[in-house]
Amino acid sequence: MKKQSKFVLIPVMFSFFVMGFVDLVGIASNYVKADFALNDATANLFPSMVFFWFLIFGIPTGMLMNKIGRKKTVMLSLLLTVVSLLLPLLGYSFGIMLTAFSLLGIGNAILQTSLNPLVASVTGGKNLSSTLTFGQFVKAIASFIAPYLAMWGATRFIPTAGYDWRVLFLIFLVIATATALLLGMMPIEESQPENKPSSVKQCFTLLGTPIVLLSFIGIICHVGIDVGVNTTAPKVLMERLGMTLNEAAFATSLYFIFRTIGSLTGSAILRVMKGRTFFGISLILLAVGMCLLCFEASKGMLYLAIAIVGLGNSNIFALIYANALTQIPDKQNEVSGLMITGIFGGTVFPLVMGFMSDRFGQIGAIAVMIIGVLYLFSYLRSVKN
Image 1: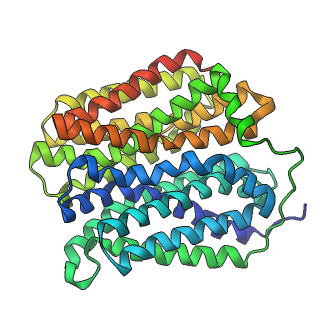
Image 2: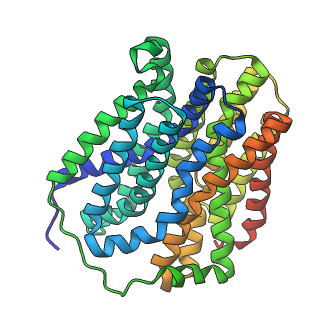
């Protein structure tokens, strides 16, 4: 393989930034709820529609890459993202927003499955881990600035201007379009797959292997907690402190800030600490944070709880993902596709949390996330050092 231009990393890193757009669904669903006077169960359809598509497109995207290549698959995901961001600017209704979030989810499912292999093509395998780690950091930047952009738009513009908080979609639309254009202009030489790709049936058959099934459920719980905090944290502040949505939106950014800090520090800590030990510490942080969210009513303690949950949940995905791959070394591609498919936990948890919060208040939504934390504690014994 010829040496790739170092400049190709620029649109690749911007693609990681676009990958972070999926996390705008948390704050966006709260604004949509307020604008259309929805209950929690209905409002939580939006994050559910985003993450449902990981169940459908995770494994087929791997097959698509074998047919059209990694770069073209990433380009397809960016095109779908551009369309999803454009729709809320052309009209604003419940149906349009549901469609926009569905397209955002489809695009993101394809992007998350195809971008990491594209990075491998760009780097040629050299410094792959560090490049992917930096990409996740870039992704997290988009995650925690989304609420700030929404708050800025909500206070800077008025609804009759056509944007208000939706200026977030305009800004992200420009970035996604520029990313697609830059990546399209960059030549990338891709390696051809050496092995015959597995079928969808063969991939799902691996769920009969205990460690794969346990890890798959673990990913569902991790992502469910991630999306759950993203969506519920502002509601907790509004319920207990009487904050407005614009004031409470900071909670989402706070979560992602500390999740980013946890990701950056976690890679260094894992060099000197066993994976099982670090996984256990992460779960203790999650448990403490959830307990504080259940019982605290002061602003400072609730902010502390959200920050602790962000730290605790920051490395769970990577630890489960690596644990599954290392224990099934001869089926890593198939296991990888299944782990990405498990991201559809972001569909399951918000739906259940919405019904529980309508019935019991936000404490009901937190209880659902605690069930996910308890499962992760049971998974701890499956983690190899």
